[in-house]
Length: 197
Image 1: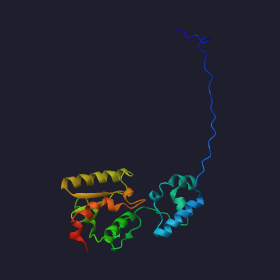
Image 2: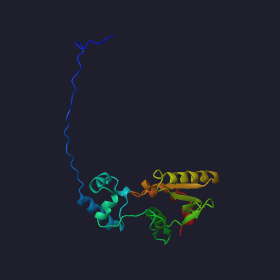
Image 3: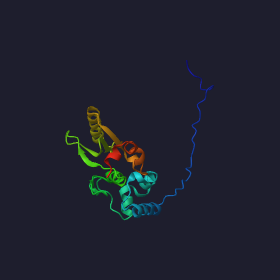
Image 4: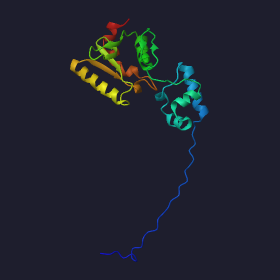
């Protein structure tokens, strides 16, 4: 059946022109540089991207990259996350800033712990042990496929050996330290009282 174009004329194409409303941002290059410098003065280190998560989209827009913003603020960016080892308050040498934060948290509370504890399986180590409980910082989980595969292998090992493991993620440390919540089983348990310094 043919459609009668007289009865049903073709619609005119409607074009809508939208003028974008200008977004006024509270962020400027100067304010970002000032925030990075202020962070450095308070913490004696340059910030990690995750600590500037709210500002990150604007940092990318204004500077192009995170490292460019760090350089513009007058600092040297992290060339590699694990290139620098950190000395904790108890003199343990930590592989990352996050490990140092965890180590210092344990030391400050008088919780005796060991670092880089071997699993005796494929050269794998746990980040910390407190009594019979292991603590693992999973800093790259969900960001790097090979790392995720390694974590899954460790989880199978934990299950096979019936190990008690507490997993810590970047969100537990940055931008606000939540170790008291994450490690609360250690604080409640009598592991702490039997292993304190």
